[in-house]
Length: 169
Image (cartoon, rainbow, N blue to C red; front, side, top):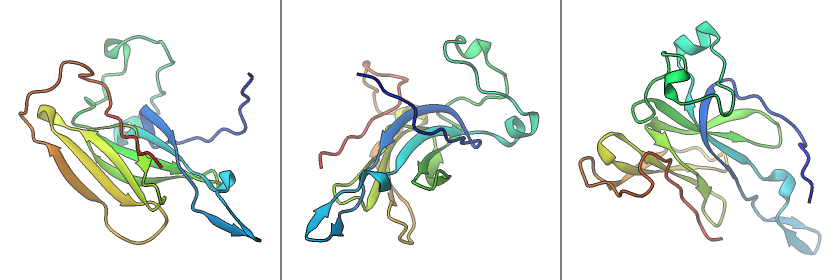
């Protein structure tokens, strides 16, 4: 099997990406059939938001395999206290912020009907929240649902890795 790059999209506001996920398009009536058009599906990129000082200094992203945090520029904040976002890249190839929070945002997914974007966020002290935001351009605020309070014992497996959320369509 061979995979080729179809297109490349720059997301200058994103730094230290943690997860990349694909969305689902809403069903589209097409003649006598109803189909799920892949050309309308979005890609969701979870990443830390590049700080103003990083943007002003023009700090580049570290190359893959460049080493641990000690090799990086000192201006990068710790992941659990930094601002992070899920960026939505649609068919128009423009990245927009779909939802944002403080902490380490993991793999985001859409509800089965494609109307809500859900993203898990790991925070300081072992806190875990679930963010929900409209995914289909409807106006409305995002919401945060606390799942695990700060100070709760953290599981040993997967500590320090971005959380994942998977929804079965």
